[in-house]
Length: 214
Image 1: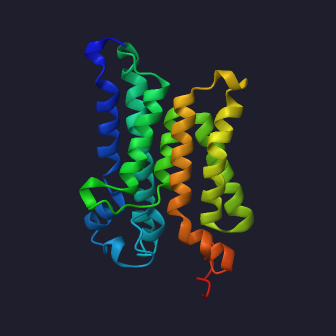
Image 2: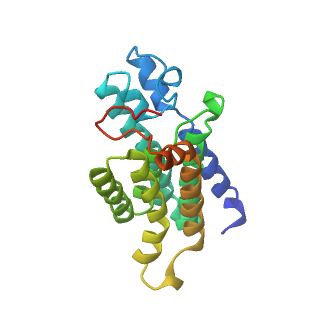
Image 3: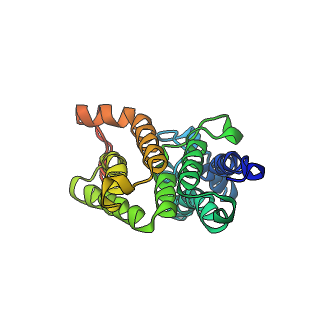
């Protein structure tokens, strides 16, 4: 990479983090006159908790915007970065930065969501087929087992595996992309630690059902 462009990967990652730090669960709720999602339910600023406000429209908008903020920084690097030496590795690191921004947003005192929708947006930006494969995994698990958290955990584990398999021969995959996807998956699993505990105890809430008693 030309030395005059050496700062661009850092700038791209910083931009990704700042975009990711836009907590749309809070922003959308405020815009639609709803309660702050950090004050009710799971207190998680994400689309699932926004749904508990009773507004499906707000939840859908939050979901789409959270996914978009993961996809957009990656897409911008893909569209405009190649002439400046920004390739797949920078795309993945920028996406990871956006994901971290969602988890720990600088604009919202570093209190963010669990990152499922944003992670999907990142995956779609890196590879639409990869994103669709992981989304299909989530849907299949959610359909058969009725646990959103279990579906998210399975999809998190599947993402780096699918990436390696999709690239065919293992020596062709980009190590920076694999590392970024692996870190993102580990962080997503970490953010679901409480859900893992409830799944183990059999007290996790099912999709479309009443909250399990603890």
